Length: 388
View 1 (cartoon, helix red, strand yellow):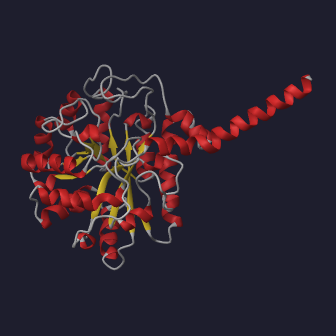
View 2 (cartoon, rainbow, N blue to C red):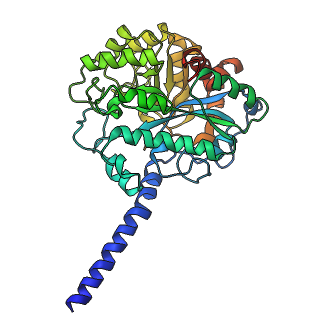
View 3 (tube, rainbow, N blue to C red):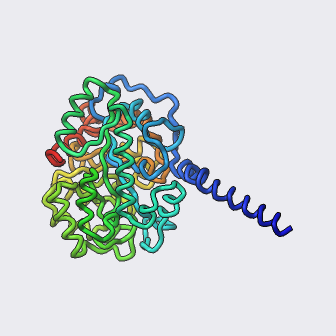
C-alpha cells in the first residue's frame, strides 16, 4: 500500500512539474498580454502601406517564451504581424525584474515576479538570480532571431546600419528591424562595468528605473522617489560617453530633474502618457514634457488605458495632439508598451486605426508619417553611435 501511494505521489509530482513548465508560461503570456480589440481585417487607409518608416519605441516581447519569427494569435508583436502592419522598426525593451503586487503608486524591490517566470520558461540557470545575465539572455534571443530570419529581421546598433536598413527597405518592404533597450538600470547588478557588456550586446537605450527605487535613482513608483544617487550621476555620464540613450520612463520627477541637468545628449521617454490629458503618477508633467522638448528629446505615447485614460486609438491620438501642441510634432512618437503584461488597444496590426484617429485630430499626412515613425528614425540617426 505504501509503495502504491508513493508511486501515485511521484506521478502527481511529475504531472505538476510538466504543467508548470509546459502550460504556465504560455498561460501567463496569454492572460496578461491582451487587447481591447482583436483586428481581423485592418481598416483601410489609402496611403498607409506607402508610409516609408513606421516604428515604435517600446515593446517587451523578449520577456515571453514566444518565437518572434512566427505569427501568434495572442500577444502583440511578432515579425509576421510587423510585416502585415508595414512596421519597419520595433524597439525591444528588456524587463529583468518586477515586484509582486505591481502598481503605479508605491513598490519595493524586495520581491520579483521574473525569477519564477524565467525558471518556468527554462531560461539558463545563470539567469535565475543574476539580472545582468537575464538582460544578456534576452539580447541573445533577438540576435538569434535575426540570424535565423533569412534577412527579414535586422538588429540595429548604429547609424550606418540604420541608414543601410532604410535604403534596403525601399526595395523590400518585408524587411523589419529591431533595436534593444532595457527597462530599469537594476539590470546592471549594481556594477557600472556591466554597462559595457550590455552595450556590446547591442543595448542602445536604458530606462534608469522601472517600478521600484534602485541603486542609481528613485522611481516614480518607488518608496522614496528620490533623485539620482552618486552612482547614478556616474551612470548618466558613462551612458553619454557610450551614446546609450537615456529613457525617462518610470523615473521619479526629482531624478528627471537631475538627469536633465547632467545629460549632454537628448533623452527619450519611451512609453508614457501626459498628465495634461490623463493625470496620474505614471504620466509626464507639463514641466518635464517641455524640458524634454527643449532638449530635442522624444516622447513615446502609449496604447494602454493608464497612459491615455482610454482604450482606443482616439485616446492615444488625443495625447499625441497634446504633446505636439506643447513641444512640436517632431518630438512625439508611438511608445506602445506592446507585450508589457498589459492590455493594449490592439496588437501591432491595428496601427492603421491610429492613422484614422490622427486624421480626426487634424494632423496632415506629413505629420502623421513623422508621428508613426519618422521621428524615431530621425532621432536615432542623430543619436546612435556612428558605428560599433
